[in-house]
Length: 150
Image (cartoon, rainbow, N blue to C red):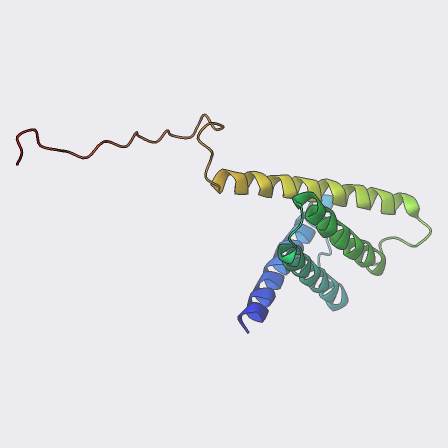
């Protein structure tokens, strides 16, 4: 039950983030009608569930990180293409718009992935020899022994 609850919470969080990005991009593009029809809302929520599921799936795999990233990217890109076609933005004959959308998706994915990597790397304990910003540990002081036998 806790796994389902966690999945739903993450899906809701990704839905809010995606809707926020959508509204900000619409505002920057100058679109005045910013309402999202219920069908597109469910597409966004489905994509958020796909993001959560892909993250859980990749977390279960025990292979090299590059293979995990490629699998995660492939799942999200496939979902993005399905959402992009179903949103009515582009028809199947307009390959240029689809190529631009895939390029922008790849750029945003790379930026988010690099940012998350740098944040996680900053939280991880640094190795003593490799990170000059890491404080060096004090040498352990020997235990006190009395010279007077007491």
